[in-house]
Amino acid sequence: MHRYWKIAVLIAFIAGCAPAQKWRKAPSGIPAVRVLLVENASSVTVSADGPFRLSFPGRNGPADVFPSGAAVRIEWAGSGRVRVFRPAEEASSEHPLPLYVGGTDRQTAVSVNGKPYRGKINLARGGSGILVVNALDIESYLRGVVPCEIGYLQEEKIEAVKAQAIAARTYARKRLGNGKSEDYDLVATVADQVYKGKSAEHRLSDRAILETEGIVAVHRRKLIDAYYSSTCGGRTAAIRDVWEKGDAPYLRGVRDCAQGKSENNEAYCRNSPYFKWTVTWEGAELAKILSRSLPVALGKKIEMGEIKDIRVRGTHRCGRVKTLEIRTTRGKHRIHGDKVRWVLRQPGNGKALWSARFKIKVKRSGGRVSRVVATGRGFGHGVGLCQEGAIQMSRDGKRYDQILKHYYPGIHLERIPYKPVS
Image 1: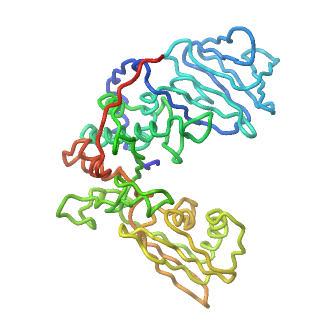
Image 2: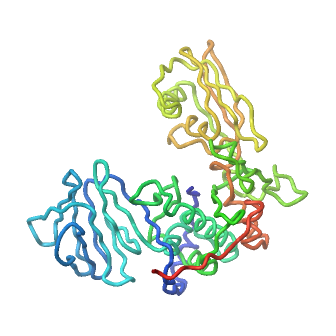
Image 3: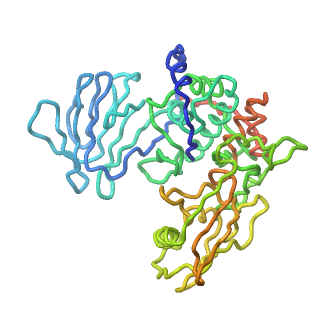
């Protein structure tokens, strides 16, 4: 769900010089979240900015305690076991996973390969290596998510940052206990929410998280699926038009503009660099891209052949492609919904096409495709909150609740009280 944001040097300098936001202690019983940082690592180095301990549930005896700055290397030994190399010791000891790393007090940040994280680090058994999981309270987790997703913004845009904080909190809480594995709830990438730990924290997003603490978006008394993306291009997408998921009344397409305004040139997200774009492929280059991306999208091996034609077979009301048809000398293939972005990857960098909201022009030579030009709008899947639109709404004086209710129609905001730990 990452939104690319170019940070001006001056803004970064000012933010660095600003006084630190005071952060209060997390309430008792605050929900914990487990975030996968690294999958199937062959080795991991852990350290901390204060004294820290390694706990071995499979070993009798007390935990090993290390001073601030000490670096402990942990290597995969196979069969769910690791070798632990302690500082200044030539020999290593072998232990079964799991293994837990945490500071001797709650303020200590534990670093994984030099990157600091709040909370604790759990090392668990993966299929062919170590799973590195950061376990921490959900409000601290948001501190490492919100600025990565919405950007490092200025004071005038704080209402957008608050809206992002609530969306990210709701997204995470929806997945607690319903995660991808018994060892973690979320991953730290765009597959869920981009999370970079303590090094990503910023005073304005910290303030937005504090001022919306515990607030989530609900529909019919249930947490919503709070999807969001960078730029909708003037109209958000209904979830059924993008993924093979059930309908949701709060995830229907909405016009990204004020009443009576045009979504073409008066959309809230009109200032995004991705509001309008053009991508061009030469025939040979496109053939190489499709030879790699089509089998992945279709889930099977195919004989590619030469490209004879590419056509858009219908669009949804939001302007996004329903079906992309690719005809080759070896057959015909159809790709639906958001998958078209991952098939028509961009030339040069191999990234997914900015959006599925596009039109194409095809040039042919000798019965084969020689060039394809896509002109489109938006960046991302387009479902739910439009981040660039939210930023403009904030500039226009809209509050965070107005922003969220615009992009998730029919929702309510509730503050979920934290329950005491039993």
